[in-house]
Length: 420
Image (tube, rainbow, N blue to C red; front, side, top):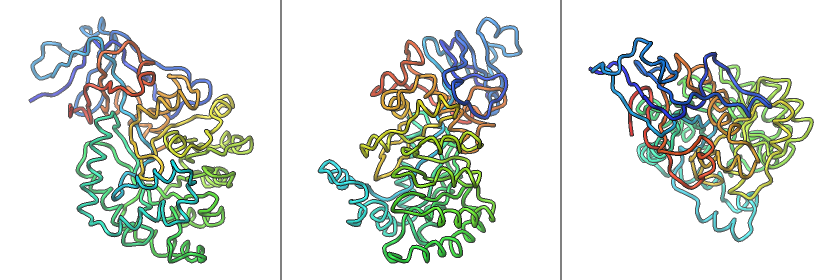
């Protein structure tokens, strides 16, 4: 029986740490620790050791030990698996008709007013069985695993009533129980106001607080609670009420904030010690100052802004001010129908003018922080979970975001096991 996995002759081992860091901030995001001509030793699902090949024989790992599986990574790089800290990938069907509407010039808000958007997905989800929803979602899970993601946060929010929100969260739990990928669940009952609560938004907020949150908490279906705090969705007052109710049940805050306007969402997230505030297209000096004094991660979703044709957040200003930045896919049917984190890296470079080192930090250690996993995921460090991938033969780590349309991943390892 094999007891370990040794990856040898690694051209470059990327994002290594001898001392754990929870996150990387400001100008330090342009720095990236690597080991060239390296080895990586995995045992019992965890990273046991790494270093230079020339030092391998000095350790206790025997290359010819028949109990150790050996992978030769000559000419190839090894990365920690991507951590995707913001997705909505448990959904039913698709919304390509709305995609056509966007091409014709309709805005996100206009499509929503016509019954599209989140309410469209809620209708489709209501009509889809739990088993079918699980099967559809597993197709997407297997897709993102093949693209290098080893940890994912999945939100509810396409139910908008107790029964359907529970359906989504139970599917997320089944994914967590059956898949090798690390999964975090977020309750997002306040994703939009259902049609039956039109002009009665406060009543729907009461429903989320009094009917949904207690049941979600009693079944331990969620790690986090989220609210879409933005123009046309939920107000700061709505958001504060929902976050306080969720936190009373032990749910940590996360927040959709400032995608559509200067909504006060960022400041609200900071006020309630949110783990992350996400989107942030509308970010000014006040928002940056609020984040600087906090432990809240600024999480950007360039796939969504790209798909919707929205202005990009002021990333260079944010980094120069000293903020940490995470990047996530926002995988969802309406505004970012892709969970390809390698593409997200490329958009970070092309659209946001981030350096390759910055985007690598943003999709590994910082995005791990944004889902509460930086102690166990997001870097190559002794004692962390062995979620890594081996690239095809490529010249450098900069090539990953540079070759934005190429499949560069050769081998996927999750929890120490080769799965592809």
